[in-house]
Image (cartoon, rainbow, N blue to C red; front, side, top):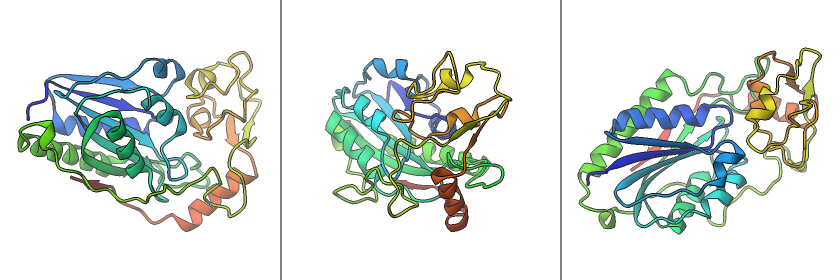
Length: 274
């Protein structure tokens, strides 16, 4: 099955998912390549459009074992017709739970034909220099595996005559999905509406954090003001601050970071399903 083009779509507040998706694309090495970065709110104002002659590769980070709600809402506006699709989730070395299955189900409901799925590891959003979890990932080994996965996708495409002949790809996960909005590292702590970001005097109000916030939760006129109801704790503002002026406060999120470091420090490897 010859694809006229490959379309990459990714939600990647800290760049880890983006790195994996582009690695997969290099492995496929298509003649025509398009990409849509849906990380920022304005990008999600346009609906996705594809055809059955176009391969869609979509990547999302895992938040509490699930697909981020903003991505789910945006994908529900997408209408495909037998578009071959690759589902990719990136998690912070804890577990991806039902996220890959959920992403696959969403794409099927949109009219896609999933032909492959994968779960890669990226540096956890709560990882810090002091308390690292999957620091520096995806690393060179991960990217090499992403490229290898891309080559295997192309091989599979070469042996499929048409989208209607794509066999179901089986990925791990459970129905109903697990992962309610309760913090996965604490038995009784509610995850949302957490005021966890400290801003030091090093902040120069450059606005980089507000500009890069995927949900517009930071006031562009005063980056010390954060809307905790809309914040998704992606920590993009912390990791991308040019002055390292933002850090994680002592409290729930720091406790979660310590728990991650203690329980999930053994390196996990990417998995893919074809």
